[in-house]
Image (cartoon, rainbow, N blue to C red; front, side, top):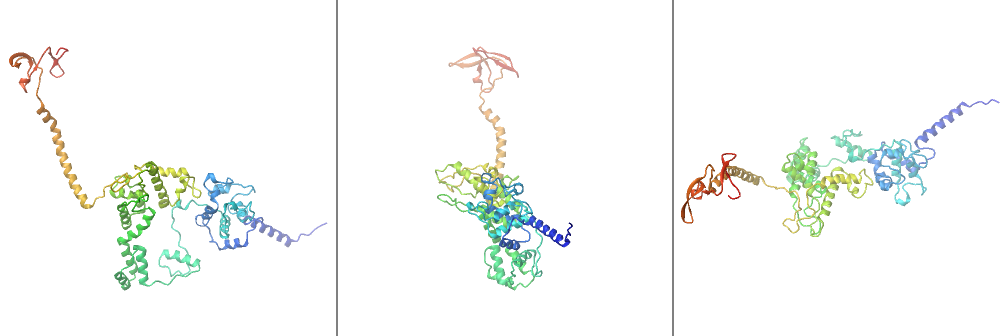
Length: 497
């Protein structure tokens, strides 16, 4: 019996099979993505970024059980490291994450499941993923599940200018980024502000103070194309600019006018504060701004300014209670410095790793105390000089003198050097003069002579060695003789001499 194959039917079956295979590679026939999640996926940015869109979800909802902390990891699964997530094969036979394939990624099945014994996060964790969060993870996996290093470890790269619809609106490159975001949100730029409003915004932003009436009048009357730029330059050159900018850094650097513990006594750290203000006003490069504050005293031929900058490290709280254990608080101060280095400069919450490996960021407890060791080598006492004037913490200090005082010190130093030079000359001659004045006898030991001397109130001739300095104190030789010495004659003495 012969059968005729319907070519159209066969072609339809092949097409259907290809669609099934293609769907399986993207979503899989065994994975049903809810409509609300699919809709949320469509609304997400065209290209997702791990650090911007994905990591915050994993960190908040997944890393507690599948993150860097080895002691807390469950199922031998890490989702913070790409290699671990890609290579981990689960009980179902699926990889934890199969880059580019949603249906073949165990995570996708788990986060969409409603089975309480299978779903992730587990009900016991009291965590749950929102629709947008599920959509983000699924779309990220489908796009290749690309991991990136922690954002704090990634060097900034100048981005390409974004496209905009109202090309004539932007006056500079920064405007393009603002306009691009406004257009994505379906918003339009506000009308240009009047000059009075504009100068007020600028003055508060740059100096923290309102503009004066004369400044407002001058800006309003200036109709030149450079009016705005000139106004900006004037405020940027104001000393108030440094004060405004320093306010943010002082918060980060935990600056305070008191110790922070117990009696909370006053302390004067204004010299360091003034250095920060001056650094902003001088536009000190960022690398120097940071390096000097962390280790200005270790710079080759460190200047007083560089040493003063290390006041950043002295902004710790200071316990002045009489009964504390100094070593305990010396360690506590260095913990504070380590944590501040992490938050202020590295952009990391390193303090979590003091007690255990960090649960969300790639910092182990060993990493923490390796960094702590840099500060632990400093000379410092953990207890203040309780009750003393100023009540300052024992440690490195520096004299902060005015230019007038520097001139006076230079003059005094010059005079001291001159007097020291004179003193060295006197000292070099002094031994000879001093000894000469104290010499009472000078014996040559060339010969023993018969010398008349007074003994017991009568004149007597005795054998002696003549003393030309004071003849009356000639040395009487009793049972002594002369012998050849290293340089001339010497006195030969015995037990009876």
